[in-house]
Length: 92
Image (tube, rainbow, N blue to C red; front, side):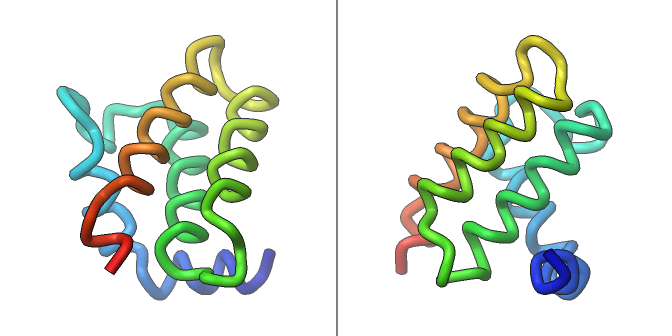
């Protein structure tokens, strides 16, 4: 967990830019604090922690959204993280 938080802190602006690029008709700052935080953690894993399989990062994000988000949070988090995962520039 410490590595994840340090990595997010080191790449905060980049993580937010990548997430914003995957949000259609939404601005990151308009999301609930919980959804935004979950997306940032999972996106950090997807983008910078290669030892964690992408599907695991997405699934963990969904589980956090189920536990702590609103009723639509799991589906929303899944959609955003899936869009991030499918970005061609992420797979280079």
